Length: 474
Image 1 (cartoon, rainbow, N blue to C red):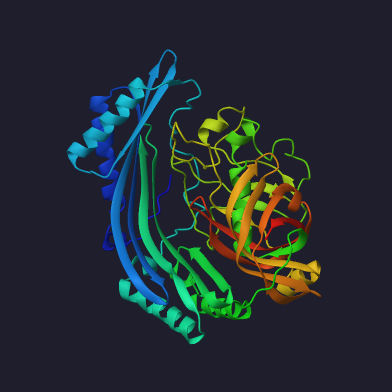
Image 2: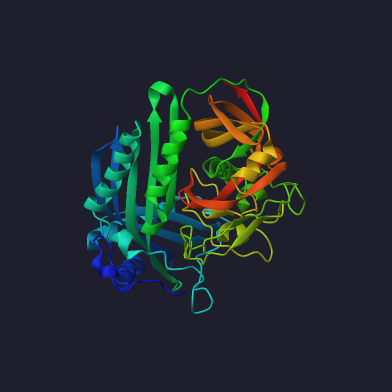
């Protein structure tokens, strides 16, 4: 498949570049050919150069940087009862380290249980010369220095102090590369950068806090000044919250609150394995209108405003997958193992690293909820009287079959009266079927945010106005 490699990659500390990465993985396959002849072998390399500036009480208290490389080897050995598969990892890239990791993977394969459903390693994909995934590598993000991060965080903290607020959070920048080579000749390579800014502004004595977050792969996606100004406004207006009782309310969910709920939908069955094992909320709903017609959910690894990916951990090219179209669940995402269970089905490029003890099949990592036509004023007007929820957290599954979850609100809940934000209120715990709640949508926001998800990817989401959401205790 095509590779993605910026010309200046070798200038960035911690990254190898395409040619050295390929030579390293070729050496792994050569070792495997000598020590495990006849086996299928896959070698994957991930390098990372990560840096983090952390702050609390409006002052920087930690700056850390880490450079690492991980080599993952998977060996499959055929037998009469099927294929036995073993895997091992190391960050020792010396010749002896390569031999050890190959031997460990091969030993696990020889002594592990046979897998009758093993689809084999993929062959090189037949696809156009140009990948639809944009190159998600920003040289400015890769070169971001501690002084730059300190300057951005210092300005944020100064703004917070000037407003009588305490700022706590972290700013992270990273660069890395992923390379994969297998014994069928599949070669895949892509570098990537990532950026993440998360912080809370609070006035603890007055019970007020405001959360702000953005993620992506380019420095210009941070927009720290706008995030800080908005968070200051919300924290100052959120002082002295009033109490409301727990019951069902119409709600407006800000994008920060929408992403954990999308993550829950993904966990509860947007992957093919959950559907095949009849434990997904999509079971019995595929091809039937089940959510509000205003909702279209896609896994889109090609959105340049998200965090683009060209291929999955098996080197299979990513596909854009419509999961829900106009309220109708249409398809989960697939890897090669789950696709092999259905006639005519192919992987959509959503494999996750296999773990015999904790593997839940393919997962979406780039969820995108289509924007609507409403601005915030329209969404508030659609609710009229209810609650505005800035953020939810500690979201846990109660029942996957209708994606019932429980969790709490955090960092800003507002009473809506007459279609306007009236005053701040206390946090509440909720217990809600998301399938039920998302079947009754009053409005979808026009503006979308890029927010990091729980599974390590990012999501592109607008705000939502819902007919009802169930709160069970203050």
